[in-house]
Length: 126
Image (cartoon, rainbow, N blue to C red; front, side):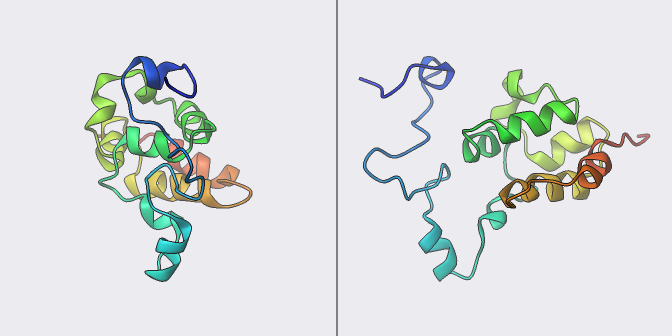
């Protein structure tokens, strides 16, 4: 029996939190393992990180809200399971570097700044 019923359960996605192991992140890596390896949670977001992986890292909806601010419908797209953030940025005519910085800033206490969001949302000619 699932702990909660929601879209992830309906779609058959794995649980975002490991029962009995609340110290594990949505990516399945504990903060202790990250710090022992000399990494921060920001290191989990790379150009090759898929849209769904980012959404799972932020079960509170922070990543989905950022996608909304960027005018990305990725949370509703079937390609989100396979499309990396850098490719999504190019597809939506955004700067991949600015997009990655905005998503990495979600790990900061204040989240991405308005300047980071504006830079990530800026559309570029192809």
